[in-house]
Image (cartoon, rainbow, N blue to C red; front, side, top):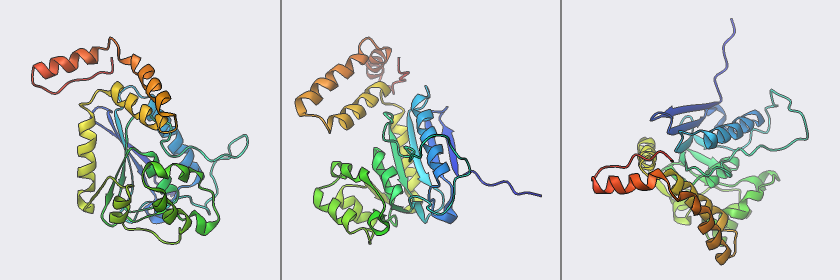
Length: 258
């Protein structure tokens, strides 16, 4: 009798598919990512972005020891993929819908990359943070964007002196974590943020995220022009009329991205 292997990446959908909860499910390996899992995450982000009902995603890790400890350097891939070798885009870098990181434990290396690519990072009090690639002579070119979250001195501290992690409170003080809460209240806090997103206009939210992220790398005047051009997609939307009606009727709006 064979025992079925547990799924290493879980996707749960709530509120009629509007909220996606993505769980890295390898607690015995501190939720380290195999190459197969990286491909699965890449596919999951694409599916979330393309889904017509999805509004907000949450990514977390199973257990309470680690959010994600980075790459699993020992487990070979189960599937050999054709073409040249590449590292999949396992973080939500190119996702324009909101993504929340529910950091349930240590957030290290590739786990830090995933958290960095999220829009909001809410951490349990025991969830230490570190970027350990310098200890293993591994690449981490994504650290170029850490200065979007914190000052350059803190970036140097974390990346160059990667042999030590910082506490969740220190990561919050540096500007990387948005909130730090007791572990038993983590998912309640995260779900409150997710629920709030269900009553915000999705097209406007997606526009704002793209303007902020792309605009961070543009000359300021060009970024303003880009934003104004992108926001032409709001013209004539039913959601604009719904927002006015909800305000007049003193109720929450029901946005449909139309």
